Image (cartoon, rainbow, N blue to C red; front, side, top):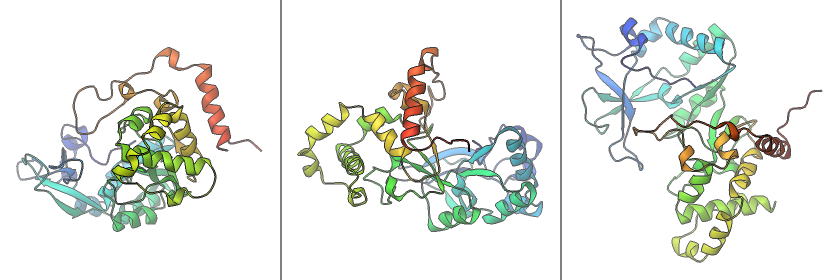
Length: 313
């Protein structure tokens, strides 16, 4: 999992300042982040130095080629974080208190990935295309040929204008229940609003019944949902985590990646990371008794039932 940016105290920044947008004193002129949205009124101020893409283009993207070459010496598949930043990136004046004063600038686009393919050949790359995605970002993902990401937990957010339900996921994608930045599946289902709980439950029931009507399921009003509270409570009292895993694994994408926390049905205490916060992020660890034959058999069963077991000829 490779981040698009490096930090200001990284060896890359210290040894190769020419790669970044700096002032005459060697300090970043602009820093990276995300604009305000429905989740954050002031946006996100990441603070990473921003690349000088004109310099990278003039050097044939040599640093990026070297970076990715090293990744593939270590790993078979690389997920490139914040893929939308290669189409357009959000630049914030250095010294800003929040991200409200930022603006969008054009990234390298497909030229970078053409250079990578010319130097390294066809490699297995996953494009992390979550969050604010425009038509030009979608086109970049399509032109690159890399699979994008589909998350079950994003599929039932009634605040989103887009359609991220499992029935819309293409085969050329990688599907997840959630990533390291998301709440565990067990806790997520309990924490979302009753409207979203009802949305997810009715979609699951339509899918489970095999009527092919899940594509017609849409969020209902709060008043309608209030009359279905008993159904919500009954679902939450069932083995709902396994049910949602089953639905994820049965979707079209050729690759599915599920956190072990979800197979173990762990709660909020097992969340790995909460973006834009400090504290206990990245401190979660599994215990020895988490790795049991019972868990292995459960994973095997769910994988077989979704026909994701690869059998040798």
